[in-house]
Amino acid sequence: MSWLWPRLLTALLALLGASLLGGLVGYVASGTPWRAALAGAALVSLALVVRDAWRAHRLMQWLRGTQEGPAPRGRRFWGEVGYRVERALRLRERALEQERERLAQFLSAIEASPNGVMLLDSRDQIEWCNSVAADHLGLDPVRDLRQRVTNLVRAPAFVAHLQGGQFGEPLVIPSPRGDASLSIGVRPYGDGLKLVLTQDITERERNDAMRRDFVANVSHEIRTPLTVLAGFVETMASLPLTEAERQRVLVLMQQQTDRMQSLVADLLTLAQLEGSPRPPPDHWVPLASLLQRVQADALSLSAGRHQLEFHQEEEALVELAGNESELFSAIANLVNNAVRYTPAGGRVETVWRARAGGGGELEVRDNGIGIAKEHLPRLTERFYRVDGSRSRDTGGTGLGLSIVKHVAQRHGGELDVRSELGKGSSFRLVLPPARVRREPQVAALATG
Ligand code: ADP
Image 1 (cartoon, rainbow, N blue to C red):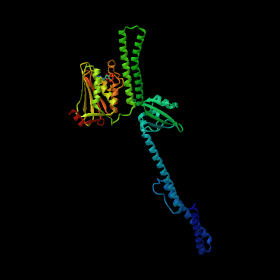
Image 2: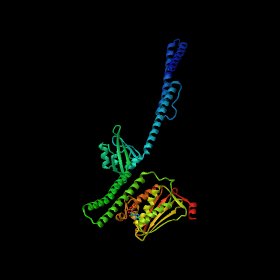
Image 3: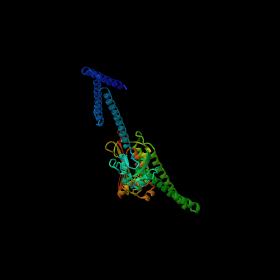
């Protein structure tokens, strides 16, 4: 109220002054001061009213406009009114600006989410959606705003889910483009509003299917030898067998238990590969000792039926960084496969060579039965076999190459396969520079 009293006082003083001046002029001019005093007071009042109206008009003009420039400033009362109105407006504008920025940040955070987010009003019209939701549902995040989502996404299951009002479980539907599986969750909020969350679960579904297939395959692989074993046990228990028959049955039973043992061993290796941390990058294993062990295995598997060759193309003493038993298992699988899939009289060559840039590769080459082109992309899948009976007859589990691929990847490398049906195959285990080191002096000493 600091403005009120000075303002009243000024108006009173102006009125008083004008009345006195008018009275004095009236008295001097006609000897009657009252009429002139009244006229003076009325003139001053009029002037005050006009001045106020003019200043109020200027402020009103500014308020009606864009309020970009400063508010009209006068002295005292109107100056203060202009200042306070402008300050209140500027504060409100700043608060609004901050709100807008916060909302933009919030929306860009949702935009960055790997999941789709869509807001629907009470009539299921799209209020907002991020680009992931738009991509999942085949929408345009700008053009389709304010459109009813059920007019745009017409999958009957989606429409029924949204209209059914039972949002406990997420809905799984194929994406409108048909190239993915979507999980759609709806969360009601506010007054009939809905938050729709979409997620691409294609990968998850594929993994689930792979897990189911894996369990089914393992069960099948175990059930077959078990059934055979059970048959033999029954035969031995119920039939009187000659010693020769008994020996024959025991050999067959031994084959089946060996088969189950290899399967369980490979399954355990796979489980260990998947569940353990990456092999250490600083534990060095001499390549020569690995190859010696693999060679011993291959010689006994081949039993003189093949020509087996092992050699190193570079002079240095090579060491590989990683897990010794994993590396052994990978190389042994490749060499044993080459022996198993190469008819008697064939040749299996295992060669280590340096690669440009510091890494190295171990190639296992054979001139065996080879593999038709269409099988190559699937060879490293678990239990994938080109010829199931041949694999089983030679003691295969169908897991060897998936173990090799895993080991290669865990050591930062890869498995490269080339093959031609009827001509032979080449499997190359490629290792990066960080996993290979050479000691030329030691090699020189060893050879010197
Ligand atoms: P398996 O235990 O059946 O040998 P793998 O995973 O080791 O399983 O190999 C998968 C399939 O790849 C084999 O069943 C076989 O058909 C084919 N394969 C692997 N190595 C060779 C090879 N050197 N020559 C021809 N076929 C091969």
